[in-house]
Image 1 (cartoon, rainbow, N blue to C red):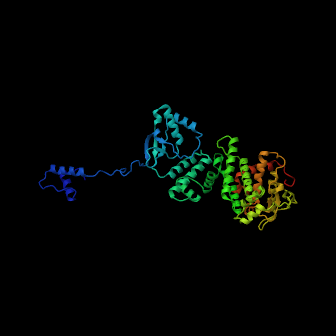
Image 2 (tube, one colour):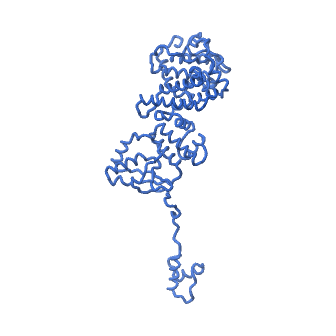
Image 3 (tube, rainbow, N blue to C red):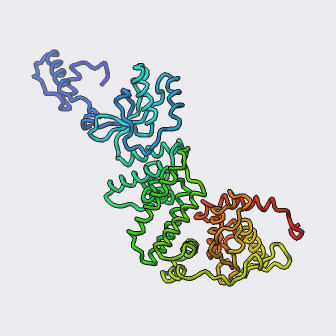
Length: 483
């Protein structure tokens, strides 16, 4: 209504709309004003947006909290002190308090807040400074309050923050992933596949590939005693060998409980040995030689349970790993029981490297003889560098035209034990055997060395072996034919 309207006109207007009880016709202006006042007092006040909130329920927003009224997240995946702890403390002291806001939340019904999106280290430092100094600059913290969604949401938020800062170990990420999966399954009341876990994690703001998740969960289930020493590469190598041996055990109908108990004992023994001689460096990862030792002991342990030779178990595991189809149980049993053939000539004598009389490996349809010569030369070079020439045999019946015999006992000492010693030699032997049983590698990649690089199951051991191979080739003076 315009400001110029009189009380009488306002009363008449409200009377017409039925908003005001009609006074007596002889009512004075004062009586009409009294009725207006009475009406205004009866009007309800504007609705309060927070009136419907339950006690203790939060809304997103900013506020100030005493540092001692906030808790670190009690399910934080981190298992060690932040290595930048001293630097972060020095920065907070120099700036006279925590200038960046912390993200906090609290569980339904809880009276205290806790860290939501990381910040556990900073909160711990501010609390220590307040208790030590009682300086008012450390007492109060500016926080961003996040409404509670779920336990899984908080776990994913901490994992995402740790991933962004790149300060966590493989084992810490594995613990967080297993905890996230457990919470999601509890909320959904059903088990989750790796694909579903990856999708739910992405919806929570966390990037988690299904293959990465499988490595995390395998480490939690089977490798906990050596968890702090693991990396993606070492876990993937152990998991790959474990899967191959598991297929062999299923073909032999070995008792799963016996296999699981034996592997747990193996990992426990490894943990005792590793922790006894290994310092807790940062990060405390297994070296390539240690991984090779673990793989060898896994194979030997299976051979004992299967009552076969370690060489037969190694050969069968390599065939299973390189097969492009599910091998029948009868074929696997034959591999475990069949003695290694020893009547074929060595590839080192059948193929003259780089010479005019070089005999190419048997070629397939669509392959030229020149390609076969090049393949033979590269395989012979690789075998010679790692002293495996006596193990490689020409075999037209194999997918790649050659086969790899079991590794004999080491003879003399190599010129460089770090690169071509027994462990490196065993890794090269396993890679060549895997290549010899690969049906698709030859059509996909003419260079067998590159084919090894393209195989994810070989990445853990291939890098160092190829470096040694190329260094040896560069140091060898070229022959007349090569020139």
